[in-house]
Amino acid sequence: MTATPLECQVLHELAMGKSNKIFANILSISMCTVDGYVKDIYRNLGVRNRAMATLVAIQHGILQLNQLQMADS
Image (cartoon, rainbow, N blue to C red):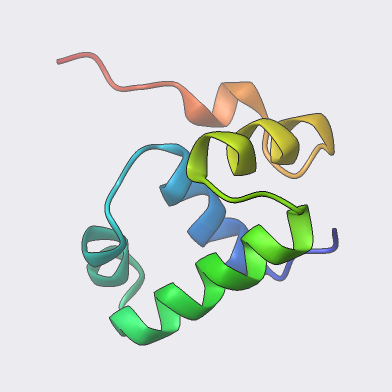
């Protein structure tokens, strides 16, 4: 999969477990746009859920594990 910069941002937020509504606000885009990106990402990666999208993106080098470090609470 070749991902656009915005698709990469959406995939990162998705991998971090944020809701579509939250990352629509973070990225300053509409919920419809986020939903479209998520559907495109799932289709392009051949997956059906966030966990698989994250795994496949890591396997293909789209995401790096060090990018997904959770902040300490």
